[in-house]
Amino acid sequence: MQKIILTHTYFIAEDPHEQEVMKPYPPLGLLYLSAYLKREKIPVSVYDTTFSTYPELIAHLGAEKPDVLGIHCNLLTKYNVMKLIRYCNENGIISLLGGPDASTQVEEFLNYGADIIISGQGEEALVGVLQALDDRGKHQLHGIDNVSFKDARGTIVENPRAASKRQLDEYPFPDREAIDLHKYLDTWEKYHGQRSVSLITARGCAFTCKWCSHSVYGWTHRRRKPEQVLAEIQEIIARYQPTHLWFADDVFTVNKRWLIKFHGLMRDAGIRLPFECISRADKIDEEMVEILKDLGCYRVWFGAESGSQRVLDAMSRGVTKAQIRDATLWCKKHGLQAGYFVMFGYPGEALDDIYETIDFVEAEQPDAYLTTVAYPLRGTSMYEEVQERIIRNGDWEKHLQRELGLSERFSDQLYQFAIKKLASDYRRRQLSEKREQLLKRAYHRMRSVYCDYKIRQLSHIRT
Ligand code: B12
Ligand code: SF4
Image 1: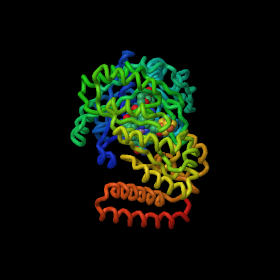
Image 2: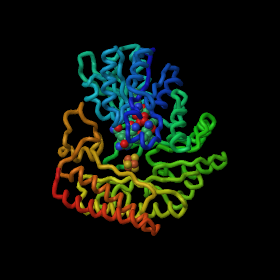
Image 3: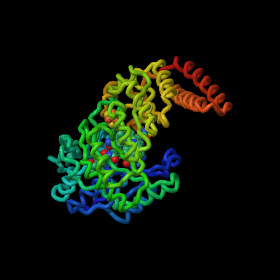
Image 4: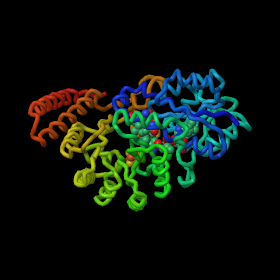
């Protein structure tokens, strides 16, 4: 059997933003793959790059000399993945790519020099590829769903994509022992006084938000049995003694019956750990907020996205402003923090919509919020709709997907002023509710007025 190493090319040392946040989590996808291969009696190791450096990764590969290097690709890691593809080409290693970014750029990565791409869920396809490599070699991977490669003549072959219908409980728990999870726990402890472990209770999301990538699981949704999730949490507690969990699901609260069952199981097992999760304002009610609170949840994130219903509808978000308001109020009433994801620059967003968003977030006063300027990710409906308007930032090798700009929209500068104005208005309202810190309030008022002036000045310029 081929000797395979799995890795991911994300380095905290190269990520100034994360160096400020310092809330790292391991790549669960690779840990799921490792567990699955081991169950199939296929030897595998994982080289976790998060706390490492590119030269250390290369030194490790030089010493270990794998036949196959499995590389997880996401939006941020593309340039490192490209370097690694070259390294593999030069050292006779088969490069095998997977994860969300590989799934949507099959042709580009193969033409760049990658040997094999696995799109979508990885477990079954990876086993199929490793067996076929032994028997037939890297140019003969026909017949394995979700696999793309070049045949012996250099022609790209894309086998059919098929969404897995297998129950998630058939898969082993992620192989956390394959990496040094303590590095994550120690980092959390050092910077936040907590030891946090992530897990997922489901794969895939069937909602239709147009900017969101469904490149791995399509529009399917599969949920694990609550008993299995409890068993994984018990294993995590026994091994790592976490003081905090993160349910990294797309929408943790999507199924109320599931949540009630899970709550009962956790209560009976006497487990209550603080955690955060992501919800949707149309997939939560007051009773669920109380359940979350009782489970240990302290913060729920909502994709508020826009304060303009017109933009929310254009995004096909399926949520109303009133629902976001209600969800926020229930959270506040029951002592849970509400966090908002906020997006500027969605196609069709007008100046009034931007102001509505600023006013909405200011008025609702979530406990935290994160902003993004929309970018077109391949494979999304948004990408399809604005394809003609994408400003190519050089050729494929020279840009990340999130650097793709759009024509006929406001300038990036305007969005940056909108984000600053939002920050000042939000902060000023917070301070005025406390009736204190006059100077700070005055500062934020002035900053807001200045941003307002700049936004209006810049609103005449379209990209
Ligand atoms: C948790 C999460 C995070 C976490 C943790 C990341 C981590 N270290 O795991 C945080 C909050 C840090 C994060 C950040 C970001 N994320 Co994120 N994140 C997720 C989320 C919700 C779950 C990931 C997960 O664990 N899935 C469960 C596992 C089992 O699935 P999986 O990872 O896809 O792995 C399977 C397959 O992809 C495949 N596979 C994966 N790797 C490999 C490798 C090989 C060799 C093979 C063969 C197969 C294979 O097999 C696996 C098992 O079937 C996903 C959405 C989602 N539901 O997947 C978004 C998602 C991955 N994130 C996304 C984005 C955009 C980001 C950010 C860029 C956001 C930003 N603007 O900053 C950053 C990048 C961070 C980084 N450090 O690189 C996008 C990726 C789009 C893209 N084209 O890359 C997703 C898909 C969200 C979305 N729907 O748009 N994220
Ligand atoms: S943004 Fe969230 S709710 Fe919408 S499709 Fe993506 S994962 Fe699902």
